[in-house]
Length: 231
Image (cartoon, rainbow, N blue to C red; front, side, top):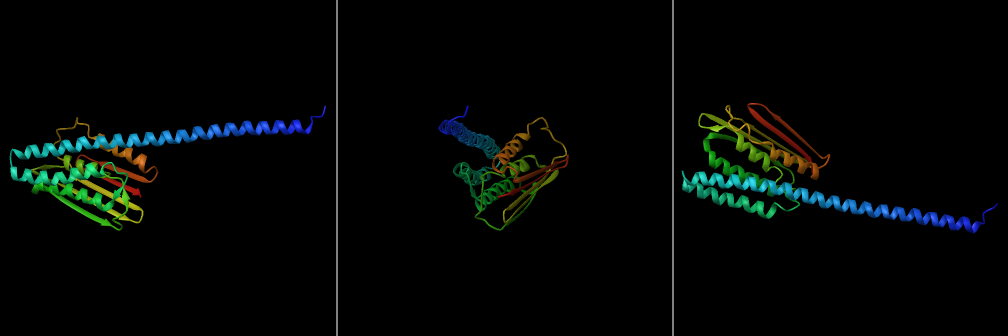
């Protein structure tokens, strides 16, 4: 029995409409999924950022507290310098992007404070090569490495340590290298030193997927890290 043409047409239109409805529902679900993933990533970044802040502030206040008992003038100078560091963290820590010049100045301020604090116990060498100071990067991206270097470096009166930092940006490539000596006798082996590095690795995976390379080499004498980013 032959099927009338209008029946075939109606059936075809119904099938097309049905498939279109399915496609639209699928597209709507995809949009909702992408939106939820963006929200989740935002929450993850905020959480990682907030995990950095208390640790950094604790170290700052602890340094000043110790110095208040030995050198009030030095403690006062450090408090003023640290206030600039904390101000930067407060006003720029939540921004999606800041200039390389701002971030580097923040690192220089932190390093200057640590040099003032430890004096001749440490040898610090830094090299900054920046082609475009106005390029934007995430804030507080390198402070974990710098803070850990000064925290775990050898710095006793009997064992002079060193910290070396190389910061190089050319075109879209940014390379950050840091190396520090480690004390011959380490008393805090049970301390969880990997939390900061774990956080920064998670931030890099979220912000620079497949656009970064982090290499870490640690021995009993030295710690070395090199981070390369395509910005």
